[in-house]
Length: 458
Picture 1 (cartoon, rainbow, N blue to C red):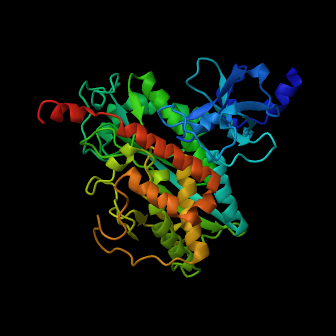
Picture 2 (cartoon, rainbow, N blue to C red):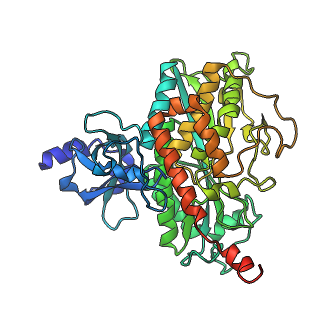
Picture 3 (spheres, one colour):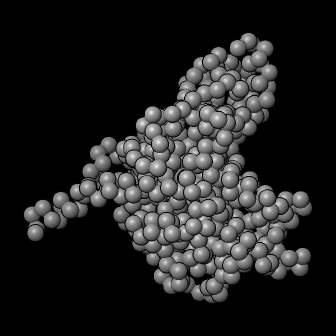
């Protein structure tokens, strides 16, 4: 590729990256995609080898793996193990810095296509795009704002040992029950400062950062906006947060429940829907009252979130977070300004009326979590599903209670034909096969608890 061609497309890069670049030559380009678990896969190459219009390939088999790297057999796929190629199409609107790299590097999220030029239906980013197309066809534009909870921990080098809180600047190990404590935030100041630096270099906006209730637990709130761009931001943020922690000798974990006696980590998502032409929030009437669409969005969420739980609580560990009294809802009740409900209606004016899904775990794939949550609300609006009466006080295990484990959750997921049709049946079949394979792998394991209490006592 000629220098003129490079300069032509380089000029279209986001201003945040151009500022980060500071006139230095780009050394490397990472073309990445989210896999089923939401981790980044892709290819890294010198700049001279990259052009946005070039065709890049990956084997489709990377989507056939469980979280442990084992492959699943899918009888309905003909010649599955030919490992045919899929095509990467870089979405240059997602171009961002890789600020932890030693040299000036660019990362770009790619869309995935088949060799015939069709959207790859099992790719998580495409699943979200299909759901958003449903909204577009109705003249609606969903708006979301994710909240990311995670733990900073002492490096855990032996998986048989419990995870421990990190040591802060005072030399003392972090303590829990310090929600909103600025002292606790300052304890991990170097890591947080680096997260801010990385975010700025990547052009990512942080709305707020707080200390959560767990020892070393942080929450980052993102600005509201387009669901696909917010999913891309979460994808980028997870990678940046891990790298910021490693730079200061800590781990950052997005496990739903990394420590037994500490609360779990969620990814609450605030959701509203506006008229695509006028920008008006369709959850509010002109007089400020609630609309039918608002109630139906809640009704659909109540009906379908329970069956979408494998997408928002995807691992066996996810269900350890659902413990009443540990700041995690175990129900799908709804109510205003009520954090014991799975669906909370935050304090706001009519123009900002929204529904907060508090069930989603931070261990979920951000694209699939947002897609499934919006799909539930969409089904409620198009099918005019009425919600239950609003909760007026504390609720824990009342009403529509969430599944207690992944096995129970999978039964509901496989039976909800309406949800599967919106998400895509081919994707749902693949996802179900992977979750069942992970369950079989987990059930073969012998835990430290079993060795501790059963080895010599039974």
